[in-house]
Length: 183
Image (cartoon, rainbow, N blue to C red; front, side, top):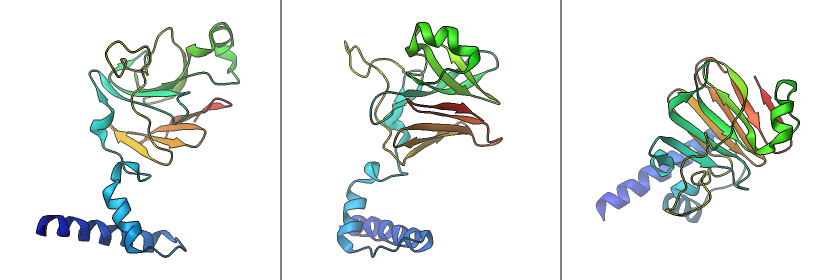
Protein backbone atom coordinates (compact mmCIF):
# COMPACT_ATOMS: atom_id res chain seq x y z
CA UNK A 1 0.00 0.00 0.00
CA UNK A 2 2.82 2.38 0.90
CA UNK A 3 4.53 1.90 -2.49
CA UNK A 4 1.34 2.44 -4.48
CA UNK A 5 0.59 5.57 -2.44
CA UNK A 6 4.09 6.88 -3.16
CA UNK A 7 3.76 6.12 -6.89
CA UNK A 8 0.34 7.76 -7.02
CA UNK A 9 1.60 10.80 -5.11
CA UNK A 10 4.66 11.21 -7.31
CA UNK A 11 2.58 10.75 -10.48
CA UNK A 12 0.08 13.30 -9.22
CA UNK A 13 2.76 15.81 -8.28
CA UNK A 14 4.53 15.45 -11.63
CA UNK A 15 1.30 15.83 -13.56
CA UNK A 16 0.22 18.87 -11.56
CA UNK A 17 3.64 20.48 -12.02
CA UNK A 18 3.52 19.88 -15.77
CA UNK A 19 -0.04 21.17 -15.93
CA UNK A 20 0.87 24.33 -14.05
CA UNK A 21 3.72 25.02 -16.46
CA UNK A 22 1.78 24.20 -19.59
CA UNK A 23 -0.77 27.01 -19.44
CA UNK A 24 -3.87 24.82 -19.22
CA UNK A 25 -6.85 26.84 -18.02
CA UNK A 26 -8.74 23.77 -16.81
CA UNK A 27 -8.80 22.87 -13.12
CA UNK A 28 -7.50 19.35 -12.49
CA UNK A 29 -9.27 17.34 -9.80
CA UNK A 30 -8.32 14.11 -8.04
CA UNK A 31 -10.50 12.01 -10.38
CA UNK A 32 -8.52 13.31 -13.39
CA UNK A 33 -5.20 12.44 -11.74
CA UNK A 34 -6.43 8.99 -10.70
CA UNK A 35 -7.66 8.26 -14.24
CA UNK A 36 -4.35 9.35 -15.79
CA UNK A 37 -2.33 7.29 -13.31
CA UNK A 38 -4.50 4.24 -14.01
CA UNK A 39 -4.15 4.55 -17.82
CA UNK A 40 -0.67 5.93 -18.58
CA UNK A 41 -0.40 4.34 -22.06
CA UNK A 42 -3.55 6.14 -23.16
CA UNK A 43 -2.39 9.56 -22.04
CA UNK A 44 -1.12 11.63 -24.98
CA UNK A 45 2.64 11.90 -25.09
CA UNK A 46 3.35 8.83 -22.97
CA UNK A 47 3.92 5.41 -24.52
CA UNK A 48 5.86 2.33 -23.51
CA UNK A 49 8.44 1.59 -26.23
CA UNK A 50 8.26 -2.13 -25.58
CA UNK A 51 4.61 -2.13 -26.72
CA UNK A 52 5.89 -1.38 -30.24
CA UNK A 53 8.88 -3.77 -30.28
CA UNK A 54 8.99 -6.51 -32.92
CA UNK A 55 11.72 -8.87 -34.01
CA UNK A 56 13.49 -6.40 -36.32
CA UNK A 57 12.47 -2.96 -35.05
CA UNK A 58 9.68 -0.90 -33.52
CA UNK A 59 6.43 -0.52 -35.46
CA UNK A 60 3.22 1.46 -35.10
CA UNK A 61 0.28 2.63 -37.17
CA UNK A 62 -1.98 5.63 -37.20
CA UNK A 63 -5.37 5.54 -35.50
CA UNK A 64 -7.18 5.14 -38.83
CA UNK A 65 -4.75 2.31 -39.84
CA UNK A 66 -3.91 4.10 -43.11
CA UNK A 67 -0.20 4.64 -42.39
CA UNK A 68 2.32 2.22 -40.89
CA UNK A 69 5.69 3.32 -39.54
CA UNK A 70 8.85 1.67 -38.32
CA UNK A 71 12.12 2.30 -36.54
CA UNK A 72 14.25 -0.36 -38.26
CA UNK A 73 17.13 -2.13 -36.52
CA UNK A 74 18.84 -2.33 -39.94
CA UNK A 75 18.50 0.94 -41.93
CA UNK A 76 17.03 0.82 -45.42
CA UNK A 77 18.46 2.11 -48.71
CA UNK A 78 21.19 4.53 -49.65
CA UNK A 79 21.55 6.86 -47.89
CA UNK A 80 20.70 4.86 -44.78
CA UNK A 81 17.26 5.82 -43.45
CA UNK A 82 16.24 3.84 -40.35
CA UNK A 83 12.85 5.50 -39.72
CA UNK A 84 10.00 5.63 -42.20
CA UNK A 85 6.30 5.39 -42.90
CA UNK A 86 4.29 3.98 -45.76
CA UNK A 87 0.73 4.09 -46.96
CA UNK A 88 -1.38 5.72 -49.64
CA UNK A 89 -0.65 9.46 -49.78
CA UNK A 90 -1.16 12.21 -52.37
CA UNK A 91 0.02 14.08 -54.27
CA UNK A 92 2.99 12.10 -55.51
CA UNK A 93 6.17 14.17 -55.78
CA UNK A 94 7.53 14.36 -59.37
CA UNK A 95 10.25 11.77 -58.77
CA UNK A 96 7.68 9.24 -57.45
CA UNK A 97 4.79 9.77 -59.89
CA UNK A 98 5.58 6.72 -62.02
CA UNK A 99 5.83 4.38 -59.03
CA UNK A 100 3.03 5.76 -56.85
CA UNK A 101 0.55 6.02 -59.76
CA UNK A 102 1.01 2.33 -60.61
CA UNK A 103 0.80 1.18 -56.97
CA UNK A 104 -0.38 3.85 -54.51
CA UNK A 105 0.49 1.55 -51.58
CA UNK A 106 4.16 1.68 -52.67
CA UNK A 107 4.42 5.22 -51.26
CA UNK A 108 6.94 5.62 -48.45
CA UNK A 109 8.86 8.43 -46.80
CA UNK A 110 11.95 7.89 -44.63
CA UNK A 111 14.53 9.82 -42.63
CA UNK A 112 18.13 9.28 -41.57
CA UNK A 113 20.70 12.06 -41.95
CA UNK A 114 18.35 13.32 -44.68
CA UNK A 115 14.70 12.70 -45.55
CA UNK A 116 13.40 11.39 -48.83
CA UNK A 117 10.69 9.57 -50.75
CA UNK A 118 10.80 5.85 -51.53
CA UNK A 119 9.01 3.41 -53.76
CA UNK A 120 8.61 0.13 -51.88
CA UNK A 121 7.28 -3.21 -53.03
CA UNK A 122 6.56 -4.67 -49.59
CA UNK A 123 5.92 -3.60 -46.02
CA UNK A 124 9.35 -2.29 -45.04
CA UNK A 125 7.89 0.00 -42.41
CA UNK A 126 4.99 -2.28 -41.46
CA UNK A 127 6.75 -5.12 -39.66
CA UNK A 128 5.47 -8.67 -39.42
CA UNK A 129 1.81 -9.48 -38.81
CA UNK A 130 0.91 -8.83 -35.18
CA UNK A 131 -0.71 -12.24 -34.76
CA UNK A 132 0.29 -15.59 -36.19
CA UNK A 133 -1.61 -16.18 -39.42
CA UNK A 134 -2.88 -12.59 -39.64
CA UNK A 135 -2.93 -10.78 -42.98
CA UNK A 136 -2.25 -7.33 -41.58
CA UNK A 137 0.79 -5.83 -39.96
CA UNK A 138 1.75 -2.43 -38.73
CA UNK A 139 2.13 -2.76 -34.99
CA UNK A 140 -0.12 -1.22 -32.38
CA UNK A 141 -1.75 2.18 -32.86
CA UNK A 142 0.31 5.13 -31.63
CA UNK A 143 -2.36 7.31 -29.96
CA UNK A 144 -2.94 10.76 -31.46
CA UNK A 145 -0.75 13.30 -29.67
CA UNK A 146 1.74 10.65 -28.55
CA UNK A 147 5.30 10.32 -29.73
CA UNK A 148 7.74 7.44 -29.95
CA UNK A 149 11.43 8.33 -29.65
CA UNK A 150 14.53 6.18 -30.00
CA UNK A 151 17.84 5.96 -31.80
CA UNK A 152 17.90 9.78 -32.19
CA UNK A 153 14.54 9.98 -34.00
CA UNK A 154 11.02 10.94 -32.94
CA UNK A 155 7.65 10.25 -34.58
CA UNK A 156 4.52 12.12 -33.48
CA UNK A 157 1.03 10.77 -34.19
CA UNK A 158 -1.30 13.52 -35.38
CA UNK A 159 -5.08 13.43 -36.00
CA UNK A 160 -4.59 12.93 -39.74
CA UNK A 161 -1.15 11.32 -40.04
CA UNK A 162 2.36 11.29 -38.62
CA UNK A 163 5.48 13.47 -38.50
CA UNK A 164 8.95 11.96 -37.97
CA UNK A 165 12.26 13.77 -37.58
CA UNK A 166 15.94 13.36 -36.85
CA UNK A 167 16.35 14.80 -33.33
CA UNK A 168 19.88 16.07 -34.06
CA UNK A 169 19.54 17.88 -37.40
CA UNK A 170 15.76 18.45 -37.61
CA UNK A 171 15.37 16.72 -40.98
CA UNK A 172 12.20 14.73 -41.37
CA UNK A 173 8.86 14.23 -43.04
CA UNK A 174 5.12 14.53 -42.64
CA UNK A 175 2.75 11.96 -44.13
CA UNK A 176 -1.04 11.94 -44.25
CA UNK A 177 -3.43 10.40 -46.79
CA UNK A 178 -3.93 13.88 -48.34
CA UNK A 179 -0.39 15.29 -48.21
CA UNK A 180 3.27 14.51 -47.72
CA UNK A 181 6.42 16.55 -47.45
CA UNK A 182 10.08 16.20 -46.54
CA UNK A 183 12.01 18.88 -44.66
